[in-house]
Length: 189
Image 1 (cartoon, helix red, strand yellow):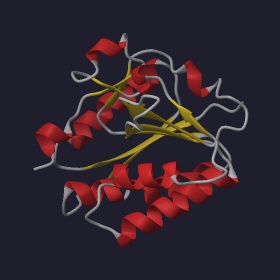
Image 2 (tube, helix red, strand yellow):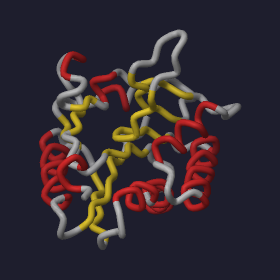
Image 3 (cartoon, one colour):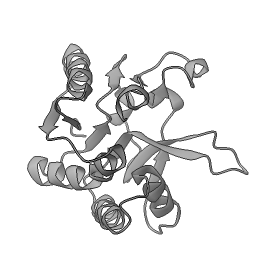
């Protein structure tokens, strides 16, 4: 399997640039190929989040048929993310659903997302971008969860919690592979 490209964007001048530089340092530490792109600031945090699917589509165009792993700019790679090399055959998309049980769907966390180079993944990205554009006030993470859960023919994997580990809320999930520092709590206002 091809090594994924780890992608993210960040806005200049509001603290996210420093977060992304730290993400880049942790990618470099593990020898992981990254493409971290600076963008001008958005009018608000929800708008910036809503740009995520468009950005991922552009990264698909740029990197061709390589798997893509989206990481929020405030993510830190703490261990080598081997799982992305060992995805089950046919997987189109992977994310972690927080608090998922047999009777509860849980909450899709969009800080770490895996997109295989498949038609089904590309169709999901196109629908996600279209829906975020049509509903600019709706959080991209909720849009994505609704699209994934209502989709036929998409092979989905639930990532372990330590691949999208929120540093404080999920501290009991064990040693993080990818840790999220929740910079939005400090920076989005």
